[in-house]
Length: 137
Image (cartoon, rainbow, N blue to C red; front, side):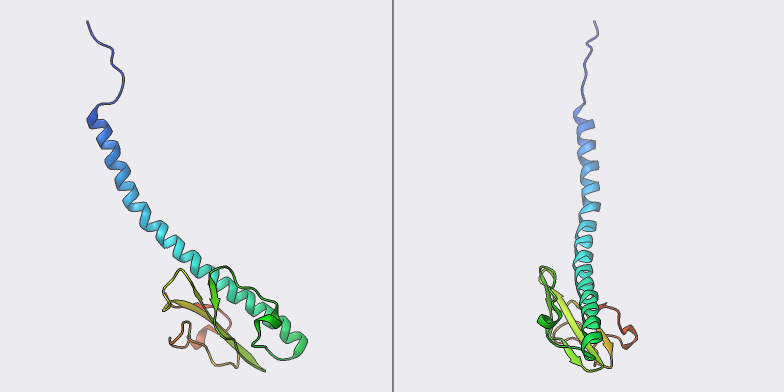
């Protein structure tokens, strides 16, 4: 008589476990990279929003301000804004993220302001990127 057995053999189960392990080894680094990209996106978005608030302030007062309070701006959670270097005809500011190393950040500058370093103690951002957030990877 033939036994009618149903189920998987040990070899089949081991093959499935190995395949899942390979897929996990490929996917986990991708998730880490996606999280880092999200941190940089948050910093860039905050700098764009701050630049918009600065332009609104400029249209009302004919100068830029170094006061975040005067702009009514709140940065995203875990994003730290540097000191706003404001002049009558321009401003620059940098940002860092708590989840990233202190040597990694973003900066933006507009007008005749001196470009700010994207991180404390870093080098000034590229002068070709006026008005757009630039990041140190």
